Image (cartoon, rainbow, N blue to C red):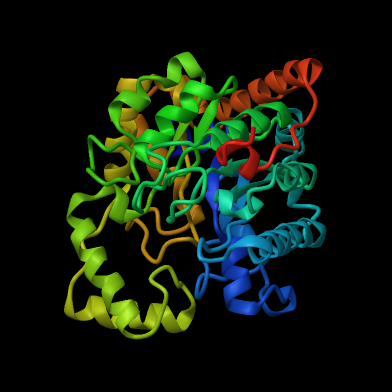
Length: 397
């Protein structure tokens, strides 16, 4: 069997669970959720990293769609925008029932795989989405959200972000309560974007496995968005999974400084640095013509996965590409069709078929199943908390 045939063979049996795709936000930014203006059953490569044919070409079997909203959204604005994001995911599933299946449980994921459909789960990216409300957290779970990233790029009232100044040096008491309530619901605690202190606090508090939906190894690329080795080393005891991201500025040291300058150029032209609309990308392309971009490849991602496997073990690694949430992608993993190139690289590095099956599918499904088991136990012991941040962190509770 040829190497490429072997890749197809293993991915046919064990397709990719990707931990993070920002298509819902891209649809908000580009067409304001008007799905009549974008045909995801066709070729959207001119404006998006994601469409159904390319998901199929990439052997994606399950996708956590990010219901992200920008972290400068706050309070009710953040909550309502998150609900709109959830709504567009539901619209996508309803429009493409032959390709997508809503998934809320590990059993749903396995059923989708058996049917040949793409299990569609949701993850909220940033605790600002719950506006300091445990009731809102539970409402998001009831609507199908199966992980929440504790912060995005900004520190919030109860948790520190990796890319902002710390306030609590980890989690506040209310932040610890949020983690416990997520355990009780069955919502995975996602530690991408958070500070290393927040990672450590969450691992101390949680009774369920955690995920890093799109983070790589800090020892390989020294960026604050990546995971330190001491945290990776805690994953076997916790049972969690670190899902390597493809974002060049997080995985390729040479790309870190280049991206800082590119982001400054975006802001100078009046764009948010995370804007990936066609107008914003035109600004990026003009900058790149004069300042050639260091390019990551599948080998770059594989270097991170090799290190993560060495420190945490093969049972604790996964994939979280961050497609449609980044302006730039690796040269040979340019969009959601590119996962086979990464798997080919790993097989060339003597990852076994069993190793690859854990990376692509089995680890992620196990983590959700284990979180469900913890939730059943927690719910048998206690009811929902209605504590407020003022009571818990303000000295009243």
